Image 1 (spheres, rainbow, N blue to C red):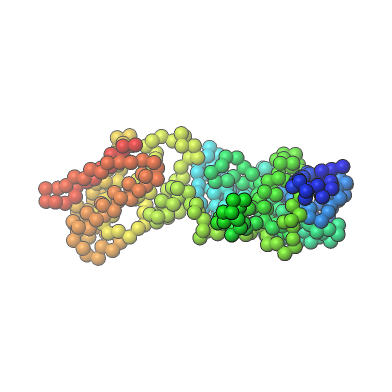
Image 2 (cartoon, rainbow, N blue to C red):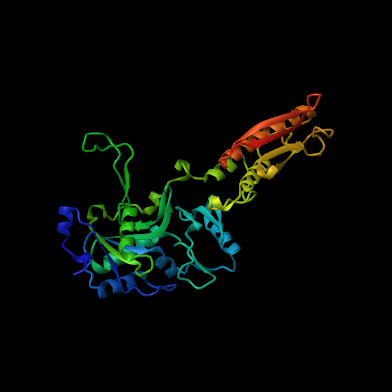
Length: 391
């Protein structure tokens, strides 16, 4: 007898959780009736569904049935598709094959590449995530519950990396009939301490359990999980509630991207760093920091009076007069936001100070530090400033 059809009374008594990967689900095509195909596979495998069972189905099967396959002609097309399927760029890094973007996807979760899949597809094709994962899970739950006459939950699973942890794990992209988030705040632990922050991600734990028996390359997208009966209820909200809202997300930008956003650097202005920090030379990091400082759109007068260069193999950043009108060596207004006819020397001084502080900030984001050395003309005008790298 399959693990998924054992007596559930033992599971309640000993907190037993079983998972079984169901064979027999064919390659999914656009327009396929997923409920019918899953029902046939379950029946052929001899799985007797019971009240409280959870069906976990890979999102790829759902997306294929929805016809979410799209063509791409190049790596640039792929990267553009990622941005089209996202609402926010969180971070991006260069790899040998191209740039990988971590984004907040249209369906909610923060994912590398917006969750777009290229595996097990013909060359030149990509598979998008299901359009509405919770809605797809509910349709599948309703159809299979009616067909088998039992109370079921459905989890649509996907794979993602996790902050602070290596490796990938499956999580609940969509769900229906399952309490995906169990809130323990306000309860007491075994020592009488009141819990203040604990919320269990039941949906993600169920998805990960299913992945352990399905595998990544075995062609088994469907699994049955038994032992979660206490979390199965028809009125449970979907998996969307597991997504951290942007306003409470402490990590909604990568560390370099957060600095660029604070400096109001327009997106796409500065090239992303490589994913492997050992893959670039020290001068590249210094050049990127200078580019970030010079691309800032923070309102500050006098910045147009200066230009920046990296010297001495990356050991020095030098700001010197740009030669534009208003620079210490030129005449008239130095330009820049908010000048409005101020004294040229004062405006140039303010602009230089602003650029130096922006550069120091950008260097700090690159884990670099510098000593600041100003030079002055005999009449008190700023002549130049050099940042000598110390790290």
